[in-house]
Length: 460
Image (cartoon, rainbow, N blue to C red; front, side):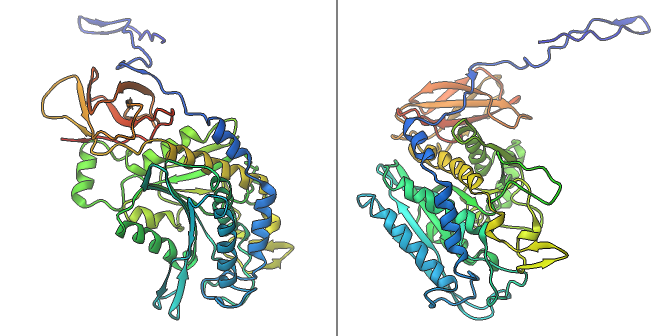
C-alpha cells in the first residue's frame, strides 16, 4: 500500500488536506491469491514426449503430396488432398492401435455443393481420432488443424501448394498429441482432428461442429492451431521463439439479441465461455515445462482472416485460435516463386520445429488439464433479488466434482481471476463481498487436483 497526500486546497472557508488514498486494497474480500495449476508428473512426462523430429517428418510428408488443395485429386495415391487424407488416417490408426481400444479413427465426409470457392460438387473429408473418456465420454474437447492448403488463387488446384506452416504445423500438433495421448486414460473425451475445406470457407470444421452439436455432445473446449510454425515475422522484426498468440472471442456469436442484452446488462462482455477457456489455457499452459508465454488477444481472429474455431463458436462451443506471434505474409497463400531475390511460398525451410513442439506443449497442457478436471459448472447463477452487500451464487452439483467447488473473483477491470475461495461440495454459497464491485466465477475441483475453467454467473 502507498499513501498519497494531496496538496492543500482552500475554497472559501473549507480546507481539503491530507486525503489518504489506498492504492490497491479496495474493496478487499475473502480468499487466497489464485495459484496457477502446474503440470503433474504424468502430464510433464507426456509433454516431454513431444518430438520436434517427428513434427518435422510429419510436415515433410504433408508437403510431399504436392498440393493439398480441397479441389485437388482425391484418388491419386501420391499427389493431392486424397493422398494426404489417407496418409493422416493411416498414421492415426497406428497410434490408436496402442490405446487398448480407447481410441478410434474415422474419416467423416460429405459432399459440398458448388459455391464461389468450390466450382464443382466436392467431397469434404475430415480425419478424426477420438480418445474416449473413461468417466464422461459425452464431455468433449477438440484440438484441430486443417490439412488442406492453397496458393495465391484459391481455385488453383494444379500448382504445388506446400502448406508447411499453413497448416501443416497445426496438423502435426494434432497428430503428435494423438500419438502421445493414445497410451493414457483421460476422464473426458478428446478428439484430435485434421479438417479439410478451411481455405475454401471453413467447410470441414463447420461440418464437424454441426455434427457434434446434432449428436448432443457436450463440447466444452476447442483449440484451433492454424499457422503455428514460426516465431519469425517479416524481415527486420525480432524473433519471438517463446511466445504464441491466442485469439479469444468476447460476446458469443451464437447468442441471441436478448442474451447479448442480458450479458451486457450485468457487465459480462468479457466473461463469455470462450474467454473463460482462454483464461484457463493461460493458467495451465505457461510454465517451465512448456517454456511459452500465451498472449491473449481479445478478438475472434486477426483482421481480414478467419479460422476453424469460428465454426465451433458459431455452434455455441467455446473455442480459441493459436497463431504464431508475428506472421510473414510472403509465406502464406502465395505461389511458390522468387521475386527480386525474395522467396515466396509456404515452404518447410521457414518452419521452426522446436517452436512447433513448444506450441504443442501449450495445447497438450491445456487439453489434458481440461479432460482430467471435472466439467465446467452448469447453471451458475448470481442472486440479485435483494439489495445486499453480500453475494450468493448457486450452481448444479456435478458428481465428477468430487473435490468440491471454488468461487473465483476479480475486480471488473482486471483481465484474469485473482482470488479463490474454497467452498466444498455444495451447490450454493454466500460471499461477504458486494456483487456490485467485482466479477465472480465458479469452478469445479477433482480429487485428483485438476480444476475446471470457471463459469460466469448470470443474474437471476
